[in-house]
Image 1 (cartoon, rainbow, N blue to C red):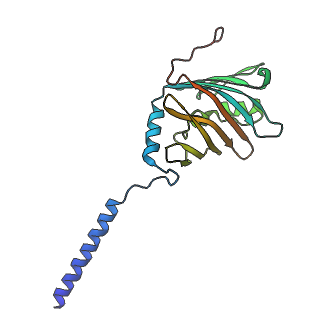
Image 2: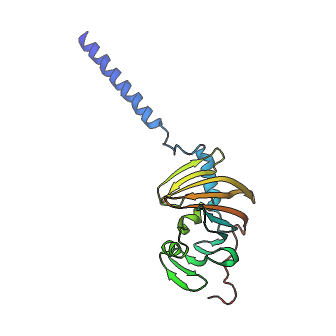
Image 3: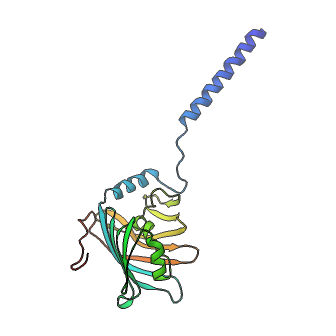
Length: 216
């Protein structure tokens, strides 16, 4: 009887171990707790990845009492971009073109070539303007390869993001060519708040960037 009881207990241990093993194998992969619908988010990222390029025109303003306000135009084609940030009457901004590995930045007085564009832009403007991240954030995406905390709604739209020292809110989207793109973005770090309003999205998956006449 003792041997039989020991055998039964041994079988019970094996059965429990087997059930635990099944539970472990069957456990689904953990998902980001901020993503309401992972499938919708994955589908949206895949759709945005199909874009070879895009262009926007909008407005930017800092949140200070006597802050900066101006117009923003951004054209992205693959790794190449062309940006213009211009204050009232075209003053107080800059133009930038190139890739993030090598950027030409022009003001009304000087032209610079740099591999550290964000530091130079901050020196020119007196406030941070996140060139690197904004290329992706403007589309409602996190910057690849950097830690990020996401808040994504049931439709797969990014509505909150913390990344690279910035906190972003996406309170409004508009649909263009069947694709929802941010209409307004608020960017905040320890010292600055930037309000970005996109008035127009266009040239989605457009052609090559052409240099204006007379530029090199």
